[in-house]
Image 1: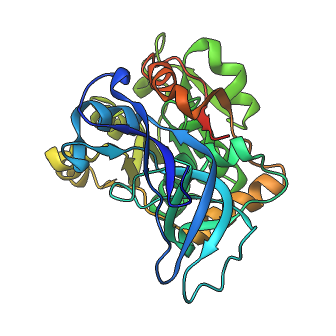
Image 2: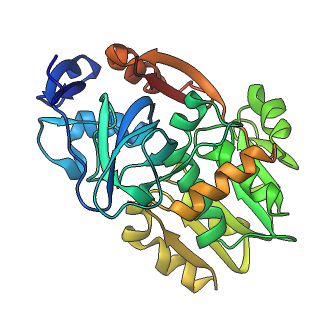
Length: 316
């Protein structure tokens, strides 16, 4: 194989998992303030499957999916002082237009990545960035949850939810999670103070006067969650269409703030997540691991909706 090519999983049409194919493509080169990272693990997120099926912001293929990366710095571009060749790093490529993690190499701005601590295995580091940054930016930056806050987190055993529970708890919040009964012990083990079986209990009857709701579900969850918030509280929706369709106006009538949020690369937050992991206050749940060439199987697993934690591709 040429030094200037690499293997990647690309799709040339929209469709099901079967459209993902291993191909040989040009290897990227790091530009000014960029690093070239040899990918060792790449997380698979629900957004990957939606993009594969519908195109989303990426439009029509061909493209290489993936935003989560853990790997080794191979080269640095001009002006990079933060990382050196050989550094073990993890990070999230700019969402949504920085895609390309399902490959042997990626090039991206140096501050897209943070150093991977020894306490965080490469698979866990590959699973953490997109979900972890989403959780951090929702709980810390948008909800501003801290000591004394009461926080309701929907889908508390999911990829974002299980990290949001731990981040909120680490900041001193009282955490309430929704999850199926089979996952209650898991969610409590992550630090939740209360867990509600959303299949058996109407959470709007069981929860009152929370300071923040982290809504990973969308649909009716947002409007219903407004009833659980105290005046002055905040609903953080990770489903952009909810606020665009008037949820913010409904919240304002109740004296509540409603915010939509799209995750961004964030070197400080990545470092903060690494510090929590090193302190033993954050663990990344891994549902399953597949080699890069089995990306289609990984996508099929995500689409069952039954994964607990994250799904990861490893790159040999």
